[in-house]
Length: 142
Image (cartoon, helix red, strand yellow):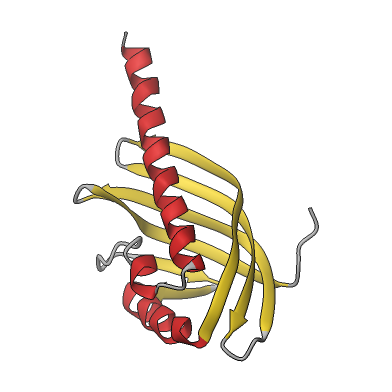
């Protein structure tokens, strides 16, 4: 039955991308820049919007590599995660997030926002091919 096969494949894709998202969150909590960056496609066509600013992979990776050594911790993660399977090799993930970022001096910043990621299956691995993230200061109301 092809409908069952399609549903099974869809479930496998959703589970694989959920695992990558959990891995992304774990890399943030561990403050591991290279592990976090391994979730993104380094291909030339990659870009993301971060608070309205369009960033290439190179610009984003320099920012992450510069910021992470100044941090003590990143706590929090995604909520209301929704995964839309677009094809066998493309998934759109949307979520809200809430996090607390603490720098090496103990200064804490609370932020929340929304993120959309286009995950593509390339070279045998799910990686983010496009992203859009907006951050707002303070704790958001549930």
